Length: 283
Image (cartoon, rainbow, N blue to C red; front, side):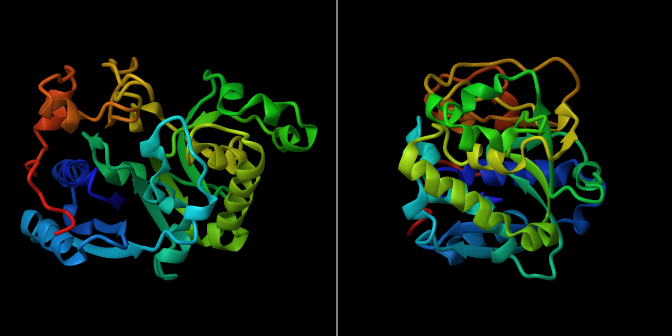
């Protein structure tokens, strides 16, 4: 999980939800990627005081290598270098860590995370995530991409579907062996030259992995609760059972609660809110 100034309240709420619904919370280890400019001692003290028995490590993320590769997207918050830190997990975490569960900071678990973590990746897959084949996959890329056969043929012979990268089971050994960080960076370099997508760090993942992931039941990522990337209007849950509520989109529950314009589901998030708005992340 990443932690930064804008999402620290979300991160703390997510941690609490994971621990509260875990049958064996003492078996859970957290790895936090934080901005290299953040006050690591303050972040560590804040986590430790709230969760005194939690095993965790902090990893400062030096964004100097990825910053030149980032193109502007449809929402400025998506351009934060820390959004791209998940691409570098395999190199940031020790090589003795073979498999991780990546979680965004704007979600709440209401089920035992052990069930999600135990998902099998088979013989070849690098990651597992919720897949939405009913979504308009074409819309995630620009006409420039689709009109260029050299680019669009990347999806030939692949049943490519949209998947959400906010909840992913990742095999770091296979990631390292396949040099997938470099493969994603290569698409980001093309994006800088040709503008082939508009949506931050998601499309490079789709370009590399769509059609080749292990699909996870939708209950493990009921995403989109933050509305779209422009208005952030209230949204209801998708039909079906729920294990993860994910406020992806512009509207974040802590911001709507502070503005006294909450959506109905934001009240559920509020029950996990541990930090007040005065937390001084960089002091």
